Each structure stands twice: as structure tokens, then as C-alpha cells.
Image 1 (tube, rainbow, N blue to C red):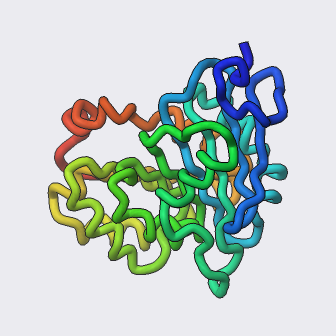
Image 2 (image 1 turned 90 degrees about the vertical axis):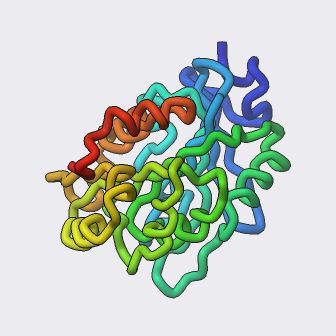
Length: 232
């Protein structure tokens, strides 16, 4: 059964494995993908980095197909974001983005949210960390800036951060080393041998890290299983 039969993205274009919809909004295009495996219980928001806009990164890196292969029963959301350091953040509020999806797509985006960002996406994600919805964040070679917002955010008991480093390994290591013990216990750090762009273009890593994120109801158990010595 396709997701349209479950009320997900009723105005989208159906494919064998899911439904795609492109929204035109005041914040730029927003791409949505809903898998055909069932009604989504979560929302995964992917924020692109610099150089490519949302239309380009969604098409060139086949983001819908990569998300589908993760097996996550979630609504996948790819909003517009800055393509260079001079461009302002398009979506300063995670709640505003989801409310726009609700209004324009004809479906309520689940408020159990995973945020994934590549490279310059850290600028947008930093704006979202004050939201109670922002509890699970993945940074794909995106440990740029001074990351002070992430430091404060990791003081929240429910916060979980997964960092994959390529070009940003030294900065990520320094950031994590400066955290307190409790904050470090909420971080998973993974150094990859892949290149900066391969993290989202290779067809494997993005799907894997999305699949690996614990369910919202499993955060406590996941934390208990994680080594108290901090990131690995």
C-alpha cells in the first residue's frame, strides 16, 4: 500500500517505494518524502550545506531514495538553507518549518524529530537547539563555528548528538574534549575515512546514520548503553 492510502502526502507524486512532494514556501522550496511502509511516527529533517540548494542536493544526491533505504518509518523533510556564508538562515524556527509543512502538504508532520545536517547546515541547526523538539541531532562533517549553542544544548538530559568528522575532525575533537563529563556522555563521535561530500553522495552513510538513531522512547536506554567515558 502506498503512503497516499495512509493519508501521507495526499498531493504528492507516487512511486513504488513512497511519495514525493515539493512545496513552494516563503522560505524557499521544501522537499518531502513519505515511505510506503506505513504511517510516519517521526519526522527526519535534513539540512543541506553550502554550494548546492535544496532542489539541487535533493536531485543530485537522490535524497529520497537514500532516506527510503534507511528503513525509517518517518516523514523526510528537506528545506532550503543557505548556500554560502553570506546568505541568511532561511528557517530560524523548527516549529515554523513544521507548521508550514502541515499547512502546505495536507499532512501533520510528527513532532518526534531527528535533525540531520551536512557541512554549513550547522548555522541553521544552531538556531533550532532552543526548541523542545530538537533532542536528536546528527552533524555530518558540520562541526564548524564556535558551537557554543551545541555546548549549551548538551546540558539538556534528553539531548543526543552524533558527530561524523572528515575535514572537521580537529575542531570536533576539540569541542568534545572541552565538554563536561555528562555532556560528553550524550555525544557519539565517529571519524570517517570518507570525503566531505561522500557523506551525502555515497548512498550509504546518510541512510545508515538515519537508521541508527534511537527512537524517542529509547533515548534513556540508549544513553545507559553508551560508555560513560564519552565519545568514540
